[in-house]
Every structure is written in structure tokens, then in C-alpha cells.
Image (cartoon, rainbow, N blue to C red; front, side, top):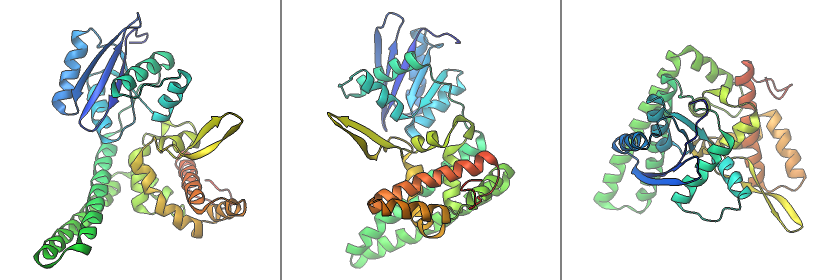
Length: 322
């Protein structure tokens, strides 16, 4: 497994995942499997039939669907790497790749794996897996609450009563999951200490801290705050055309839940965090649009979060980091 000659690219979607097995001669075998436990087992059997148990597998970070598959493969002692989609995208541009299908993406990921040999994915600890599940469940419930609130505006009569009943139940579930998250973090001293470090940053409350802990762990896989920003999909895209080159809106290729969780904290931090407030004032003075400033504040918050977690020291406004 230290010097594999077979490489497998995996393109994960909600209901299925495409795989491409690249051999030493540069030829491919492609297959599609359902994104279910049965599909995971079928994929393992397919790898065995093609003598690819010691291949180097690679996939993009794609949220819950990818995590389940990566965890399954790691449990089977399969070498699996999980990389930021922005890295695959940049690699595709160097190849001048134009085809945009799931099959083509899986092949592109296999070639990336052969070229770059990314580091093996390290499964998170069980307490992190549990925290991820709770945070994801809370996000699902909040999304449902938003949907039902929209329906309430148009509902009448008995339909309105039904929506109100659903909203009451969802509210109870939200409070219950929030309590579960609090209890879970309190049970694990390391998580509790890290939550307190994050909450020392003005703008970051307990809920945001829980999301950061869930999806930044293990922190050792990040060597810089810049990598954390890219993982969240908050890095600016670079575009070049003719004589013009510049930065365009954020990549949005990383962890969407992590990115979403930082929006409101960034708005709060613009007013109450001295480091971010002065930073945003400078951006506004340079003519940046309000939304650009908020996104920049989100990036800055991630930099500060990485700083306190890496140093193990609470936020110090005089230093900007711990």
C-alpha cells in the first residue's frame, strides 16, 4: 500500500457515486453504485474482483454522503484520501479538461490521485462523529422550521393549525438537539475546552463553536488558516482572461454547513469584535461592497478560530490571535 499502482477516483452524489479505476497502463474501469450501505458493500466487492483492495482511492469532501463512504472504506483498511474540491478543480484546469459528467469527474479525481498521492484520510474520533450527526440534525430541523414558517404565511383555517402544530413539534426538537449538543460537549473535556476557546472570540457563540468543532476536527490535517478557509469554500476564485486577472466571488466548493454557520457570526463580529470591526472599516474605506466585507469577515473569523485552537489560548484582541 506504500506504492500503489492502481488509483480510484470517486465522484459522490446524493443518491449514487461514480468510480473510475485507473491502472498502470492508463486505462479505466468505470462503475456506478448507489449511495447506500448496500452500495458501499457492492463497491468493496467490485474492488476485490479487480484486485484493487490495495489501490489508492480518492474523493472530494462532499458532506454527509461522502463521510459515510469514507468511513466505511477506512473501516475496511482501504487507503482513502479526501481532498478539497478546489484542488481537483485547479488540477482539471491544468489539464484543460472540458467534459463535465460524473464519469469524467471520477476519472479526473483518479488522475489527481495518481499525480499528487494525497495524504490518507484520518477518520474522526467517535465523539466528533456524534457531534457531526447532532449538528447536521440541528441544521435539518432549522431548515424545516424555515420552510414551515413560509407555509404559515399562506396557510388558512385547518391548514394553518396543522402548520402551527408542526412548528411547535419542530421547535421542541430543535431545543432537544441543542441540549444534546451541550451535554455531549460537556461530557468530553477536550471538546469543552475547545468550545470555550472558540467562544472567547466575539461573534462566535456556543452553536457556531459546535459546528466548527464538528467539521474542523481533526485540526492536525490543516497546516495553515488558509487551508481552513479553502476547506470552508471561502477562498476567492482567481480568474484570468486576456489582459485581465482578478478575484471573483468565493469558491463555494468546501463544507457548505461550515460556511453557512459563519454568516451571522460575521455580521455580529463586524460590530462587536474589535479586530474584525477595524478590518471591515478598512475594506469599506477601500470601496468594497457590503457583502464582500461580510465574506471577508467570515474568513477572518476562521483565521481567528484556527489561531485559538492551534495555540490553545483564548482570543486576545491586542494580538488578533491567541
